[in-house]
Image (cartoon, rainbow, N blue to C red; front, side, top):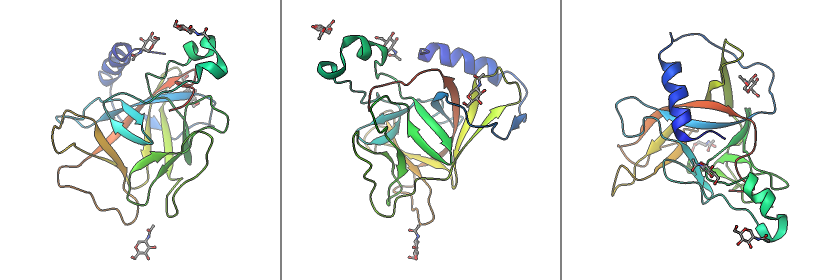
Length: 200
Ligand SMILES: *[C@@H]1O[C@H](CO)[C@@H](O)[C@H](O)[C@H]1NC(C)=O
Ligand SMILES: *[C@@H]1O[C@H](CO)[C@@H](O)[C@H](O)[C@H]1NC(C)=O
Ligand SMILES: *[C@@H]1O[C@H](CO)[C@@H](O)[C@H](O)[C@H]1NC(C)=O
Ligand SMILES: *[C@@H]1O[C@H](CO)[C@@H](O)[C@H](O)[C@H]1NC(C)=O
């Protein structure tokens, strides 16, 4: 897995290149990916998308967990769970986890971008599971791409401190932003070769 510094360096090199050469997604592959938000001149420019406590945030840390008594230290060391990795993104989206059954991403009825608990497929009635798409650069060796949700993603600050993690929402049909301070952002992806956590 890449460090945040490596990700940032990669991003800087890509941003230096000309824009406007994205193409529709090739056939879905097995790759995992991480997401960084982009909203220039805002407190949420280049924040990692983090899975914590059943919901997604921009910034902060993920709630990665590994049952070391069950699966052993060697396995847990392979999945430190300190970065948020996703999978899919072609229609539906999942977390990049190893736990049997996986963990699916959904937009809750209040718009909150959420994910299922390990060992459960439960999603509240009225949630939206699809509407995700990924695009890639024309250069097949370029590991950066974009993730989009139909209607867009929007993040809302902690009223106490905008530097705390921002809550992420998907703008579904009836979505109303919880505050006037929320900001729409776009999502930069970088391919990863492995799951990021046993579970989040
Ligand atoms: C990135 O992942 C996508 C989806 O799995 C794949 O199509 C693409 O070839 C990968 N790009 C690189 C540079 O690995
Ligand atoms: C796993 O590693 C931790 C820290 O290195 C150690 O304290 C613990 O005893 C190890 N557990 C097992 C089951 O090997
Ligand atoms: C995550 O943990 C691994 C193993 O301890 C470490 O090598 C890596 O630098 C950490 N990454 C981040 C982003 O903290
Ligand atoms: C949106 O609101 C309308 C009118 O209240 C309702 O009929 C519809 O089912 C809602 N759609 C969603 C996706 O919640």
